[in-house]
Length: 417
Ligand SMILES: Nc1nc2c(c(=O)[nH]1)N[C@H]1C(S)=C(S)[C@@H](COP(=O)(O)O)O[C@H]1N2
Ligand SMILES: [Mo]
View 1 (cartoon, rainbow, N blue to C red):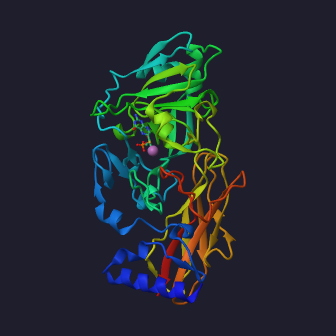
View 2: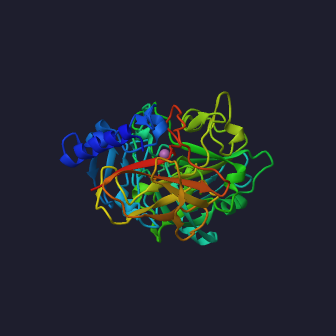
View 3: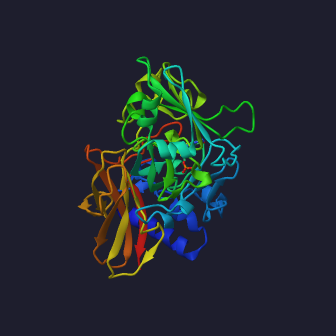
């Protein structure tokens, strides 16, 4: 490591340990290997001082204290302490809503309407009928907000300033959307399936939440209308009584409090498809949602390959001459994780971490690596996941206006004392 970087690191770590200006450590270093660079090139550390100052833990009903981002609408992030287990508990699972009018849906009152101009036989289902009339299916999948880590974007972008915890992994149980659609029967002009929900805006001018999927994904075996999460009914905040589960796709499509399914012959034009959740066209090598691509933008689709070190925190002091345990999670949009490499020399060399149990290609996967005992000094620990398509995390943040797909290689700054 360049001497000036090492010195700067040490200054920040000491400041952190001293408590005063503690969070100066968490701002990315601006000098690396003797070059002056933008901090965006250097991977992320943690949220900026201002953002961290504003966040508080708060317990919603049925939830453990989560990191409060906004109260109305409810946006609550999972603390990293709950991201170290194969499954994220329902009580600790993050909560993200766009609209503030979230009523309680009673199981006995709930109805799911299935129709649309390209459905031959529209019908309605109660929760009981949904559970009784169709085969059940189960899948382990990461649910990750497209804007997870938005608060780490540099330059800063507007929107909920998420840290690393707008994500979780769970076993989802429900029925296949495909089977529900088969009962309705589709006409040959079916182009997309649109999903409506029970949450409502408090201001008339805010559009209701509607998302659509291309037919290929709606008919995919893995796409579920789920009513259980980790063996229990969905929590209210996570979409009780039923939500869409679209493994591999960003969570914006995982419509909660699902109330309607419409097979449509024209592209859905609601705000949440045509304006929000879009990326500059071709910026990421993810599948294209062809019927929704127009002009310079296209909708976000699958999750990009990513990883998170969960065993270390920037600013942490570690005892010298003791092995350092590097552990975390790696995931992608459904090809599955092929490997995770760890570097302790600013990316000059990488070594393979050990992968944990494979819980399916939509699940995250644990990794672990032991850094041999060190003498006193600062270390930057980095992890870089690769998926089975050969895609890896970038060294530079891929900046985009809405702050999606943050998957730049993480850097954790620690000091051996
Ligand atoms: N009805 C409804 N469903 C929704 C949303 C919403 O605002 N309303 N937000 C979506 C977004 S953007 C995300 S990230 C996920 C969050 O799921 P969770 O709250 O269960 O973690 O729900 C999705 N489903
Ligand atoms: Mo999201």
